Amino acid sequence: MAAPGQATSGIAWMVLATILYTAANLCVKALAHLPTQELVFLRSAISLVLTGGWLWWNGYSLLGVNRKWLIIRGIFGTIGLATFFHTLRFIPIASATVIQYLSPIFTVLLARYFDGQRSMRPVQWLFFATAFAGVLMVKGFDPRINWLYFGLGVSSAIAAAVAYLATMKCRDTDHPVGVVIWFHLVAVPVTGGWTAFTWVPPVGNEWLLALAVGLLSVVAQVAMTFALHQGEANVIMPFKYFGAVLAFIFGLLLFDEHLNQWALAGIGLVILSVTVNTVLKRRWEHRQQRTKSP
Image (cartoon, rainbow, N blue to C red; front, side):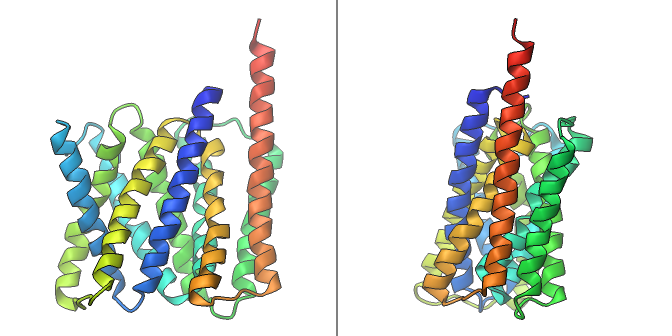
């Protein structure tokens, strides 16, 4: 179990990562006319240069230590990002975000069985179920979301959960930036080869947006990796849901993406479920610590 100070620091890093990811996603939405594989390639290529340069300058190995989990992180991170970007291009950003935000639930479930984090109570399963019900409300009451995009969104969440678990597996062996770079080492050759046959050149300010996607994303990835290095998944990951609120606000302001009251209620149900779950989880941990204290 992470110390209280570590958990608080991990939450702060996760909130920062969420804000930066939302900003990057808004840039992707503005570039939605570009092919998905090209968006992933541009983001990953820019981030690879930044993270690779940082590791080289500071004397770290590009290949890392825990290579099994680093490779898994790279593969599933690439799958998760590609499917998320594809949904982001065709459905409202708030809806795409909240569907993809099932990943913390899948992360907690995976961590429960593969990372030894078994301190869950029955009521937590209820909160997870209501969060999923909220996501279903977002899908069911928005005619712009068909089952294809919903399925891609859920697939993205599952792939992201595996990538997050791999990140946690590397917390004691690899530097956070060394974990981040493996995503780009996989994504750049895979999407780059595809993009070579489908390239649509950005024009004017689109290059600045593409650069912003890479810059914001790499800082967000590092922040999220720091978060996962400093706390348990069942405490840290629910704070990703804060991004759903940001996505709705800026999707409405910048892209005139309106959601009906039922879809908004679904987003609210998701946020309420994970917030209550997190508060209760922290109280249970503090109570256990007081009980164990002499």
